[in-house]
Image (cartoon, rainbow, N blue to C red):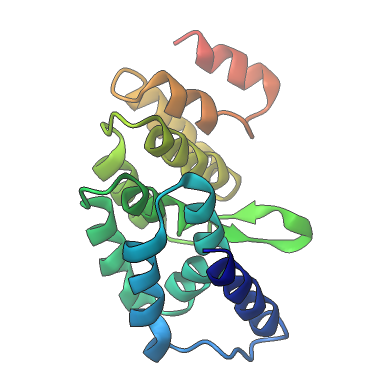
Length: 172
């Protein structure tokens, strides 16, 4: 697994130089195979997402159908890949969500009832970084769904919200 993480890091570094990249859609079946064969922990799941899957899903919009399939997997860390793959590394080690809000909310809706805490955290994390792009829409979604989201998801989703609003929302 360490070798795969190293390869992922190398692919990301090579692909970060302007828009040229050594990864291509033809490589995707191999990368997705790694997901099903080697990902059994949240740390390796997130590394694969940051370094490889997220750039693939962002660059090739047709892969969103794979994201939806991952969300339905019986395997916990394949399900976790669905929301985490929509979070991209931004500049200066920050994260961003650059997808249509509709796509984000489809993934959130598919996974919001998942009982596993690593899935709840991933859904909250996706909402947290979506807030930076869609602040009003995410706050509205959280207000409307406060009763149907786990407290973990809700709390994680509020981490980027200004303190005053976060305190108000936590009282809901």
